[in-house]
Length: 494
Image (tube, rainbow, N blue to C red; front, side, top):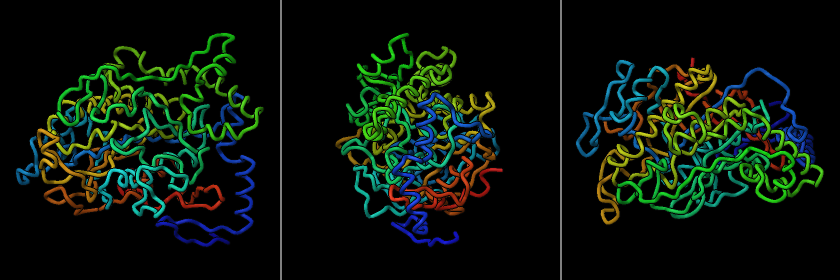
């Protein structure tokens, strides 16, 4: 870059601009002349951004806890008994590609998806692994604090995507649902927020779970697939509900609703409160008027109203939190959101140190297989699949060896954390379906071909969104950082 110098901070390549550029960036930030600020002014007037050619979208399905590659998409039926597990592989619609027998709907749709069986990093703890995969950065900064999100954290991929893509509607560019990610024992995961990008660049958080951290021992797709993690059986809790934003305003009720109780802005955009408090009353009033305009949009109301979807649609996706979340993601993409991150599970739903096989077979695979298959079919039938990349991963994979890490807690064995190898699922967005990229060794422990990094994982998402390879994002001081820290996975798309 002319007139600039490159250097690295905590393993992330940044660009040191000329002093004048930094001053301009600082002034722009002070005056609110950012992409987000432009949107605030447009929303305040009830206007959509200027039309532009369609922008590709991404739906990122994050399987919190870390699913086993051996029991899903990289089975090792010829391996030792203590490695291969109880499940059998089945042939997909693509000759030569096999996946788990308990994912039959996805197996039938293999022409729509591709697998990367060689993603690798070195962070086998939940907090650090989540940070790595959600930020797309292998080298964790020294400023990182376990389960203590900070303003100096690197921004999530979702936050960067929201910052670097243009708005297509009154909705924001990036959304996270149906809840933030919690560690079962010690708070909120770092790496899932805007961090250095500033809280005005936070993705919208749509919290749909009324008990997001009430029961640490219970997890899964509620209500009918909620399970007790330690006992390996169905949960006896029946009071979990999936709460969606209410978008109906009664005539003459705007001021009373906004002043007297939680507004839509407060329900689904809680991260913007700091911005709201800093804004002057006139700006705040205009912003609320813009929210009212958003609420009057029929497509937006429909996107959130998933519980009242037609019975056939609910049956197709699954009448549970996984199905509702993916249906909402699909509708948000159609309504103009560029990136939607769906956190599939809570308190490490996929963290199966014990009771691995019954929990996967009876509680996790059925709603996942149905919901993801429905999402792919729905996107394809609506003509959106070619322009929507669907990505599914966890924070890491699982150990090849099956054992009971805590016999006093779990009745049956499982698999431990394993960062050196995991499989990532890709579909749509120009992905060449019916293929496998990369490979792992005979035990599913380490990549043996075409290893991929979290940086390449993130770059693939940015590329799908049409973000230029020389794009940068700026922190609060105006210092720019390169968006791309890696390269899009070669051969994945046409």
